Length: 400
Image (cartoon, rainbow, N blue to C red):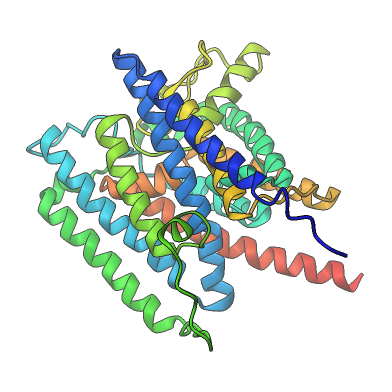
């Protein structure tokens, strides 16, 4: 059977059109006002972020699983590269906002949260949710652009998880969170000490990973020489490249708009819907005073994070169409329910932890927040436990 190639360029044209329209929309949103400038920049940054995620497969779950199951540490080394570059960028920006890191003052907007066992529990649950659903929230967003219906189930589950998080917030806040310390490392170590200590920790982890990882298999035949447009638009990027670009985007986002985060809009939608139905208490104690992926009762369709998320998905769709990665697939009932359940766990963990692997882990560590390191540790532990449980459960099913 012959394949009709007359329409082979239609997806490429459609993808290029989407990316061009995003650039045009970013320019149109910037109407000269402060709000318009932030919306326009949020759209451009979100589109760039989605493009980078889709091209480099920068997914926290995937790169961790590759190491745990295959001893391939390249993905985690890419994450370490992102954190290292982001740390340098953030600490440089902090010097402009807050020349002296005096006690009692924090850099504006940075994701520096309270440290307690509640945060550890939230990260653990989030990590298990990643293992159950097969991706982190940011990866489900870019995979939605690739046509993944299963990712839509996970994102719907995350909305329900956020509502459960709001319902449990007051009890956790009054009993634990309100008395928990907010620890910013430059307060104790200064900018230089904070940066050097965290870079040293990352260097030790990178060295350990390099020694524990299996060497990557080299191809028997060399890859063909590719043009620059093909490399940018159709070739899969190495994770370290995506990590460096994510760090750069994160630094620009913090300097001009807000720290990177992908759950503020999801949480705000969940909070608005639940409040409208009368499901939530009249007051969520202390929630709006914390740093992190803040949730609000939405009074407008347009918000900086909402525009960022929409652009992320659309840019991923455009990138996937150009690269031939757009492959819509309807999931089976079991897969859909698994993603829904994993999404609920991630939503609860992200709400209680004031962010996810992007907002709390990535932006938190870059900001020198101890909360970011704690989230990373217990999120990885939850991911490991979730993978073990998932393998055992699937093994039982195959025997039945």
